[in-house]
Length: 338
Image (tube, rainbow, N blue to C red; front, top):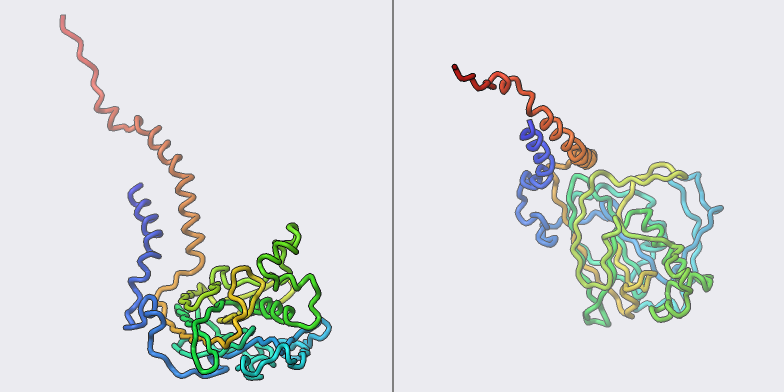
């Protein structure tokens, strides 16, 4: 009986490790997709993927009273500042107006199940983003290569690469817009302080507090001050977001290439050059996807076995001397005949 139980527990732990053995081979689309080297297909813009940007000469802000609930999904009332000599340099701003003049999620894109390659041009002190809807039926590998452009020459460069959901990108976008707005007060300007200025001017009790509070997907897909990134993402199910004050919404994903000095310490700063980001995205079908409840079941069985093991051992020990076969085998020493 104990051997049978041990076999069942061992199967539960070993089965997830062996799941990769049932995934069929797709040539170059192997475990790591050979660093996104799979065969690429043509991009259908605004259907399977969309391009967005944040630029310093287009500061948007909004108030709660300006939210229009009459339209599907709502729409933010936007205002923007006119380009100025200080914030706008056409030689360092390759983004087109349609990339930053509209809200980023007016129309959802289709689930991403293909392989693509594209190059983003990110202006100085700007942000480039690709919006896509990752499929939970595929494992997605994202490769990003960074270099800079000065004039007609390419030069080494670094940037920050983040993967975010829609709600996370909203917080990140708000932080960017507020930092580049014309009415930022001194409290919010602390995000742009250098390391030495931050230590000198910010009191210790407020140093760890950040009102923007933006983060990346799963708190791990954050690659800062780098020129090359390879990340792999596997979803257990479609990403869903819900709160006490809103209905359940499905989240899209944003691949963000950051070329400004954001609120994080240690990120790449402004480099006074155009950033070129070569982005390749490859997908591999997943033949075996374990449901989420298998994790809870595994831990439940594991901890219950820890609790029950002493009880089972003690019971077998107490019953060891009560076997009726042993009673029949007992014989008394015969008495000596006198």
